[in-house]
Image (cartoon, rainbow over all chains, first blue to last red; front, side, top):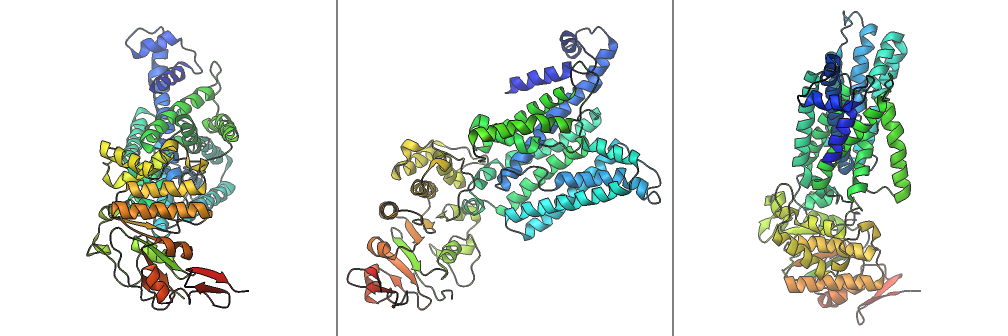
Length: 330
Length: 238
């Protein structure tokens, strides 16, 4: 699988609107000579960070999906369900569209990548904190799931109200963000994102045993000596960091979080999280790289919105797998 | 009406049943004993220690449970599910030691599940699934096993099969096994002790003693169902 990941990474990097021969791509990274200087620049400062972002984003989103599906014992769970992505959208929408609406308060239309990331992170953590406050009062995970959906609807409603009153240019900017993109990150942002995702992965690895116990249900987990409250918080925080951080920096990317855990379970035919956690990360990264490669429309100058590609490629795959297996077990 | 003034003591190596009408609080009592839900009043002790003084991990090596709620992931294989019973003893990532594996295999053999250990839970019948859950509780290697209605949804043969297995486990491994049930007649024949929740003085003791005390006769309205102390069975009044 690691081999497949490296292969996809290679394919992804060597394809793009400017066609660069594979040998030159190889040479550029391993100290050889490259025919044109501009190619070297494209590879190092555009394609490599983009490919690595795809790896981090895909792996992180897939892992957050796995955590949520196990925690909520629900095969439909994903980063969107807890309202985390919607929270990030609200943050982004407030910044992009709100700045024109409340021009008196935000004197300058200071919308750049960094402030956007901060706003979206703030939004996702606001929703996450609200969900956590509710989670401490509600014991039933099904209820928590519904509350997450409601938070999602509320934030979506705020966004559409904002969109209604905003001007076309700002609206376009917001919509562009909501398409999702793995290509706009600088090395510095990529470092930040990798840090966040790494914390999420470490928390998940520490929770592997608990995640397995949750496969039996919460009461059984409790009878096995699991500290329910503590472990639920650890898993929710990991999910929030993964989904919130990624959505903030790369936009809301659909499908990966929900679908990859299912695809991985089909391949490995196990429910053991010792296998699933690393497998899901790698598989998510591979799938994200493939989607991104496809989005580049190799040899053409156009780039499709990544969000559309993940859904177009991924949706039918999941439907096909489920129809074939006839049931959605997790 | 919920039963109050419940007082009983269970010894190691005994199989005991909690019986009573719907809604009297059988499951609530059992779940309280297993610390799944907080107790309403009174005191519970395990080997002379208060239930509250156990840390959750300590308790997990003292009490194992079989609940009525379905297992969350039906995609688990029998082996994986039984292996989860070893969690209180495994390290931070849940790696199984040689001792854990032996204990899992022994539990599977005990409940005659070894040949199908790679089957998934969704492929199993209710009776098989119940045996898997008991095997998991057995693998947890506790001195007490609590089961909530282990015989529900099973046919007569499988009900008897489950209860007989429980009885032999209790007697041979010196575990205290307590379960709730609606199968009063079967419990009279198979259990060492019974707790009858009747909302009154809730008698506890050996089935034959309870019959002598006429404990079963007031359980149901006598114009509908009557108890025959000679045969130890109920009869429908027409």
